[in-house]
Length: 163
Figure (cartoon, rainbow, N blue to C red):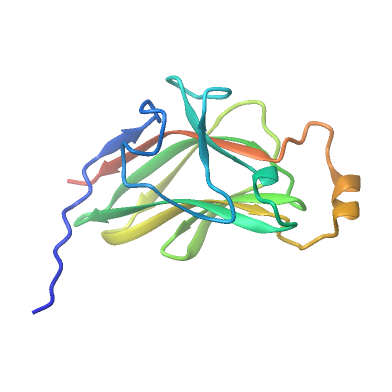
């Protein structure tokens, strides 16, 4: 038989203290890669970030994903600091290809978010979408809020497996 057994994902906290993406099996994909920064952080020394300017094309996506495998599901919490505008960019959380959370706002304070994770193998993706409406560059320039940075920071990701 061609059966592949996956071990369950243990509970973890990701605060990027390694200074990179090596502490957990993160998958970086899309039109630009997330990076680790010490400029903004919720706790510890670092956070993960992506900016729309990192995506060279007029529109595109950048994904930071992880596979979570559980027999009884779990809870996923994270801290988010968005500086986004809905006409220009979006932050999304996607589980198994289904959008379950979306944010497009400018915040000065970190925002706590959480989701329940259903049992089984689940891929969780944190995604930045640049220019979801495919607007022309000239239109984009005229729409920008003065406080807009076109960037999102992610920190203190905690996965708690149900037991």
